[in-house]
Length: 372
Length: 131
View (cartoon, each protein chain N blue to C red):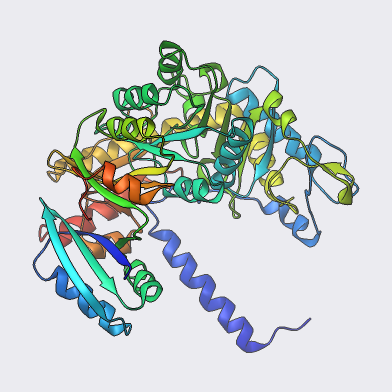
């Protein structure tokens, strides 16, 4: 089919604008360094992963087999003992929604507790699934305030406790201590409990750091969500959700229409994104991801050093690639697409961020402050 | 008359900014009151076109809250919100949500929503920002 000149021009203009914006991308956790050229031919197919990837479907043009391998990879990373189930989601929010939905189904009377530093989408989800919730204050470093959590749990000991733990907060990269949360449950003799982990970005970082920080199923999670387009990188947003199989089995629903037992949230699901994740996992392997994480830490430390040299209080958590800095001007925030909250902003040192990009950012900061 | 509560960064002229914004959207203000809590301002407005006002404020980036959520002021310390949860438990009021709106200078501002707003209002009289 021939393309109209106006359509061509519109596409060219859009592409160039997006390309230009990508070169200044520094504030959001999306890895732009990926190459899926060998997979381009799959765009010619009508892939649809409708249904549970672990159950045979009548809709055959799917990548379920690949999806299962992706889930198994993440199950190993998150130290699941083998008895977990999961699927490739459309992003971290769907994974969080699944985890909280599962918890709500298991404990209809439960209350969800989550920290002040939790991603805004969680409040949206809680409204959607109509579940009572109480926000817990955060510590200055972004972790949940365990004392505040304990006091609040103590008041509601007769009600099932569902905690959304941040495995890397959005603004500061702080990791809530899942073991400590479990200890609080124990100390308060709470029996009906559930912990979901939002590990959007850090879920692909913590498995590759030493000494390992407990964050997975071995630390006491019941389910967790990790983004795929963040650290791994994908042209289409995606993620994975993993949950203990015993929980999922309790809410399984038969969907005869597609001849499958569907426990996923959506109907039609993307068949291409599992392929992207599988390809990246296969190409890079554990050693490749470990090297990527180490390089991100190196560039993050370089950024901190450069910012400190300019008199700015820049810092990061030991196992985080999020560099926190004082909020710069609005113009700078927009130019470098930085996320800001109150008095702080952050740089997210993803694999595509180089020292050269940091230098350009710092020069821009200096120019603005009249020091360049 | 329904009321909207807007949480803002306290600065000179903020009241006028909100009034102008609402006027631009054809909303008449019946009553407006403001209270400053350190660097945070709480503006309470009663308007004739509730939904229009609410969406105009939200679209402009203001934190606007509907009247079914109660704004309270507490000391910013661990366990303060737990104390509020206990009051509800003792009074057998179900909590829909409690979330922290702002924490600054030793004060925490929280929004509380329950299944019995009138009763909750009486229960929180001593910490309520708006009545």
